[in-house]
Each structure stands twice: as C-alpha cells, then as structure tokens.
Image (tube, rainbow, N blue to C red; front, side, top):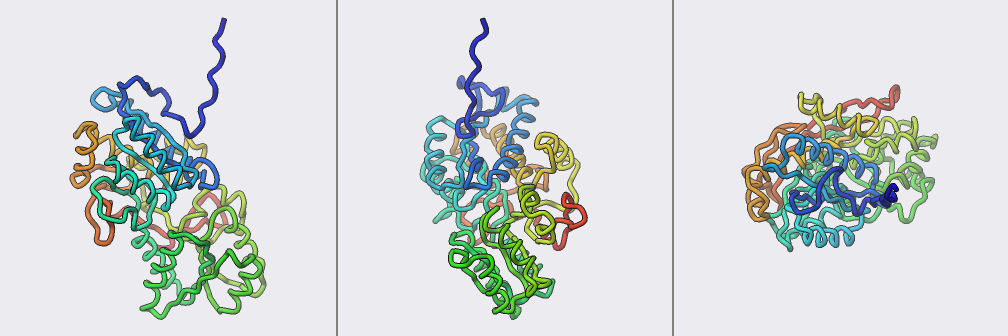
Length: 378
C-alpha cells in the first residue's frame, strides 16, 4: 500500500530541495517576498539565484562535507512579518541570513539581525540606512540608493531633463529617492515636483504634469498598480507628447510589466545592476537561471546567486560561528557573476558594503520587448 502524498509546503515554510534537516546541514535563512503585496516576481528571481548557488555548493562537497540548506521565509513586503521570521530563523540555528528585495523590509531584518547578533547578507535592498547605527553584523551586495539614484539623475541631466515630476506614494524608500534626485539635480538648475498619488487619479496626474511644464515623470509607486495605469494615461494624453516616463526602482525589469503594459511599457528607463557584458561565470549562471526560470533572469537573480557564493566562501573558511562570520566581512574577496566582491565601510552607510556593483540605466526595446537598450552606465 502506497503512503499518502505529503501536503504541499508553503513558501513560508520551505527548505531547499534535497536538504536534510537532522542537524547535519549548514543552514542559511532566506528572506524573500513571494506573495502580495510584495513584488513576488522579484522574490521568485531572488530565490532562483539563491537556490541555484546552493545546488552548486552542494554539488562540490558542500561546507566541509556538510550540505548547505536554505530555509526560506516569505516576507510578503511586511517588515513585522520579516522581523518575526528573523527571530524564528535565529532560533532554528541558521548560521546567517540572506536575501530580501524590499528596502523597508530589509531595514527591519537588518535591525533585528543586529539586535540578535545574526550575520545578514542583504542581496537586493538599496536603502542607505539599513540600521540606525553602524553594525558589524550586516553586509550588502546591492549598491546603496544614494549611489544608484545619483547615476540615474546624471542620466536625466545628460538627456536634457531639468524639470522632473515624481508620482509618489508614501514610503521611506520613495521619499529617500526623491531627495537624492533633488539634491543631484539642483546644482545643475534642475528641480523635482512631487505629486502625491494618494490624492490624484492618473487623469488628474496628467493635468498636473501639463500645469507644471515638466519633461519627465518618474514612477515612485507600486507595481503593477498604480504604475501601469499611470503609464497608460500619460501615453494616451495628447497634451503630453514626448513625455519621458522613468522608473528608477526597476519595475520594467520584470515580465509582469511587459504582460500588463505591452508597448506602452517600452522606453521606460530604469536602474539595473548588471555589467554590459557578463564574465564567463556570469554567462554560465545566466544560462542555468534562464533554464530554471523559463525565461531571462533579472539582475535580482544574479544578486541571489552572488549572495550564496559569498556566504559559502565565508562558511568554508570561517566555519559556522556567527561571530566569526560577521568578523569576516572585511576580508571577503570572491569572484561573483558581476565582478569581484569585496566589502568596505562607505561614509554614511552603516553596513559593510560592496562598492560597487555595476549600475546601468536601461530601457526595454520597443522593437523587441525581451531586449534592453543600455542608455547610461555608472
């Protein structure tokens, strides 16, 4: 008689395929947004990169003969849920924490990890202030928002845009981004008009754009809504021909943007953290990720892969003691998919920082939605 099938494992309770949970594994806690209101596609790509690297580590002997296990928790873009997950994972004995895409969530993870003394390697979140005070426990792969968004501001200036509008929702992340843009543009005669999307419909937003005489609109809002509706309204408003629409946070990176926006979603410049040409390692990983995801991997998938690559190198050299892992951030020297990864202390940033991952401003090609045009690099 066959045993009954096992019940499905929810994303909030999953572990990496094939990993043992009898204490012989080296555990890493993975925090990713897999359900709404999180950007679930970003979470799926991040997890794909993490899992690919874990499989490769285990295929080459694991950590001193012990398999590496990924214990996954879905943050759903909820800081409180993420902080509770840190407590749970710490209690499960993970050697380190990894992941997260949303900046406000990553900040909650970083602060709780700092309080508990658990190493956290942040994969994708960019908010400069992940912790209120400098901490030895947290390191980050993604470039800080002040670095990437200044590059985006330089792109705007180079394209001749001086009067910019931002369609914004309330968020520490969006407010920080608007401030970075304003500070970078002001010395060059530029200005930023903030338009509160809590009070405006997409049609009313178009009226404001006409009244302010701006030449570019940046989407500092959630995806798919209201971002998709704003793009559609602006593209169809005959008063706004040639209005540039930008999305520095990267909403057009993901296929859901294409599925919902279609041709309207092309020509929307956004930040992407990839080199113009991948190294042999990057090309090999890109091929494996493409196969696993059933399509082109985003830069977020590469961030996930690089995260485990760094942690595996540290675990092999330092062991699983949390204090030793955190103490090793300043001596990390690992070849990642997007360049050599080393951490340093950057002024104004309280975590160990890779300075920097490559930064591009790209847009989807109107002639081929699966292709990207590089507009600016930094």
